[in-house]
Amino acid sequence: MNLEFLEELTESRMFRNSRDFSQSSNKMLANLSMIAILVSVIYRNHSWIKKYLENTIDVGDFDHVRSGNTDLANIITVLKNFSEYKIEVSTAGISFPVMQFRQFAREIINGNLSRGDCYRYLYAFEGYLKISDLELKNARRSAFDWESTSRVEKRALLRYIAGYLNSVAPTMDLTVWYKKEI
Image 1 (tube, helix red, strand yellow):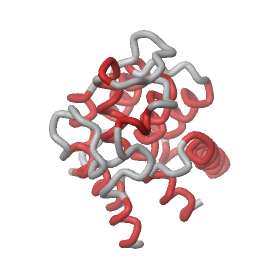
Image 2 (cartoon, one colour; image 1 turned 180 degrees about the vertical axis):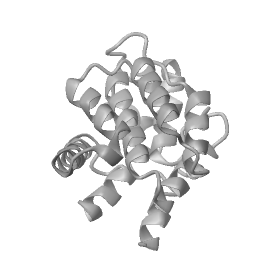
Image 3 (cartoon, rainbow, N blue to C red; image 1 turned 135 degrees about the vertical axis):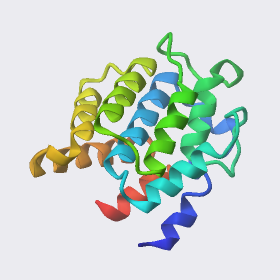
């Protein structure tokens, strides 16, 4: 395991303060958080994702953007409190279910995420985040059923995620790992 990567996951790289969100829309942040959730599902048996999720939910109430948070924690903070941050509201009704995310993260950390719970969480996140992109919806379907997804579909999904992260969030903490692995 690459310990250097674990150190990189303990601190935000892309969104270090509230000004870093100035060019962001709530839709872009919702899609980016969904990608991070899908990465969490795909790699749920890996220790680095468990550590990343621990660092993400250990921030408290998601009330302030901090450089010591993970990028995902800062994205959740902005989606939860978007009226306090100067971001474009391109899609009405987007919200982030913090309590459900905490439960989801704890189940992954503890290795207790069942197939039914995984489906329930992913479907709920898709609804709360108002995910309308068909590729992202298909990515959710493939990530949910990761164990029985064909090698070709897995490769296609991993390429889609890598491409999305490289184009939208090239300096995000998860992207750094993805560039090393894909």
